Length: 205
Image (cartoon, rainbow, N blue to C red; front, side):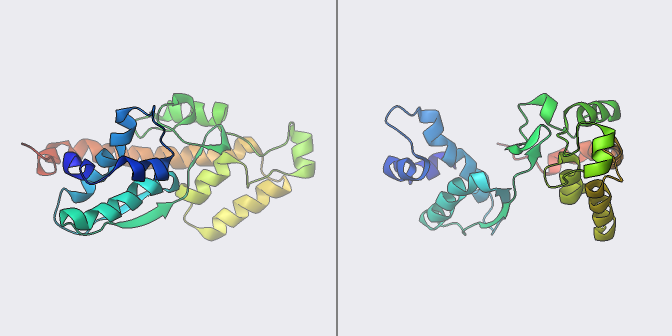
């Protein structure tokens, strides 16, 4: 499928979209074809959630679809999840210290959050009580907002308590640690029980 897609993507288009140069290696150029291939493995409409940085790849995918007699995929743009180290970067699987993996045990999650999660708090407790924290840049709060606290009232209370200085950074991190570990415990159990069903979903030659 990737080869069929590649036949319909010319270099001038990818050069314009991605800023490729004449010295760009062939792997980078072919990457869009690889990204597109799973969209067309079944003859049915698909919905693709992805980070906004992947948008150019899937715009090209939509352009290619009619050329190979496939339905155009629908796209959902998602916000970038900040890395543990701060809101300016995105979480990347290649940085072990700034990423929570679904295979991480509870003690690893606790260590990563306590040691690496970027804080919007003040340098010391006295100053934090006086000035409060900044939940807009605090990674622990942002993870609660994005993933782990579905109750808007509870989330607002956490926001207000942290911003006022009533809640300390360590207390906020502890809330997140418990939420993540509860989620991962359930996820890991379900993943283990699903292993005997893998053959139902694998594509085989």
